[in-house]
Each structure stands twice: as C-alpha cells, then as structure tokens.
Image 1 (cartoon, rainbow, N blue to C red):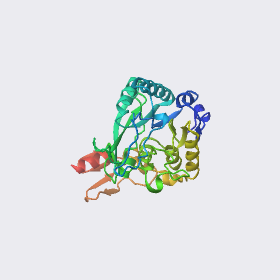
Image 2 (cartoon, rainbow, N blue to C red):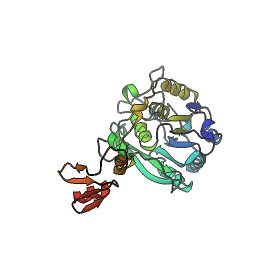
Image 3 (cartoon, rainbow, N blue to C red):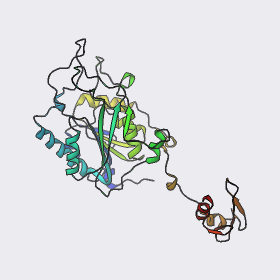
Image 4 (cartoon, helix red, strand yellow):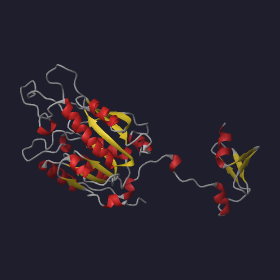
Length: 331
C-alpha cells in the first residue's frame, strides 16, 4: 500500500495549473513527482504557409508558443524547464520528452548536461503520417521520445511484463507503430477545427504510463495542452498535475478529463515478473501440515521426489530445495 509523503500531501493533485511552466514547477515541492511526460514546443521554424496539391491550406503549427528568436533562445528555454523538472523528480523518478528532428537532438544534449541518465530513445512510427506536400523531403513519419532517469543510479520503474503483454507476448521494442490522432479521438472546437494542433494519441501515453509508472504515482505534464496525459493518468489510476498557460487549452483538457472514467482496481492490475511473485517454501507447507514428510511429488514428466522433514526433497541421489531438485531433474 503506497503511503503519501508530506510533499505529496501539499501537491495540487489532479489539477491544471495556469501559468508559465518553469514558474509553476518552481512553486511545487522538491522530490515530489514520480514521472514527467513533456511535450515541449518543437521550434519548427516554419517559413510561411503550407498548402496541399489542391491549394488548400495545411493546418500546421504556427502558434506563438512554438516560435523562438534563435537556437540559443530555445536552448536556454530547454535548460530552464529541464532544471526545474529534475528538482521535482523523486530520486527514482524518470522523464519522457517527445520531439521531432527540429528539437530532439538539442533536448537530448540538454538532458545529459542537466544530469539526467538516458535510458532509451523510443521512435513513435506513425502509421498514418501527414505526407510531404512539397515533395522536397522524405515524409516525416516519426517522432522521437527520450526516456531518462533522474540520475544514473536511479531505480526507475519499468514494467517489463506489462509491456510484453501489451505487445502480444513479445518483448516491447523501442519502435512503436501507432496512428496519429484522427476521427473521434481528435478533439475539435466549436468551428470544427482542431482544438489543439499537436494532440498526442491516447495509445502513446497508455504505453508510457503503463510501462514506467504504477497506480497511485504522481505524473506531471508541464506542457499539458489538450490533456492527453491527464486523461490517461486518471483512467489508469495515477494522479496528475498539468501546467498550461493557454486558457482555451485548459478548458478543453478539463472537459476531456471530466468525461474520463477511472478504471477499477482489478482492471488496473498488470502482468508482473514471475520472480516478483511471492513464493511459498516447501518447509512452510510441511510445518502447516499441508505436506507430510514422505509424500511423493511428481512433475509433468513423471519424475518423482520425496518430501523430507526439513522441507527439502530427495530424488534418487539428488537432495536439496524444490528449486535445486527441479533444476537437476531438468538436465
């Protein structure tokens, strides 16, 4: 059972804070956050409008929040928010940062300079990417996420078996094929336009949170946008804190999260490693009378072993614990 720390009791859990991300993070208690998911401005550096072959305008990201005067200005911004984020992480906390070729390499260097320890880069390969309308470059069909722990020695959360189960019993790789938001998942405003230009798919956050956090953990998103992180966190039994300075986006996120249902405790259980499951020792069964010395146990191959008074087994000339005898019989 997870117990609340004093820092967590002071946190504005399951709320969206209004304001600048660095200022808001600096106002929160140190070492109070388990996981951070950050989708910062990509600094796309768009020059003019984009148009499709039929001359219709592409709804690209040209908002003021994605515009920086120089690479140096973007780097300074990145260093500031990463420093504030690291202060908030618990000793075993971790961070995910998503970006594109425009910014992710600069972010990766800033992460390392700030003291984070990079664990993986994960490629989100879009199954339905937007085409390159000008035909001047390859279709930009992926984004990159960097997963990093607070420090090199951190005992970060990694739910290996749960991710393996999500991947149909196969070890989860670092390339994830998932669609971009479309259809009913894409949030729209009253005019029918995109409510947020860079809304991330729920499936992406589902993998991130299932794989690197646990129910009851506190998840921070300092660039909250349309609230995908908060909605998935609520559904999966995590607490969230969002930071968003745009009132319209906050309104969209609040409505979305309000309509999200939290899963019950049974549904939140995920697959765990066999090594993590509690083991019942044979001697405990003998002491409680559930097994009697002299009883014969048989495996699926018809091989037998006899229970001894001290809870060990004997099979022909092999003696020892159930694990030792079992291993010898497998040879």
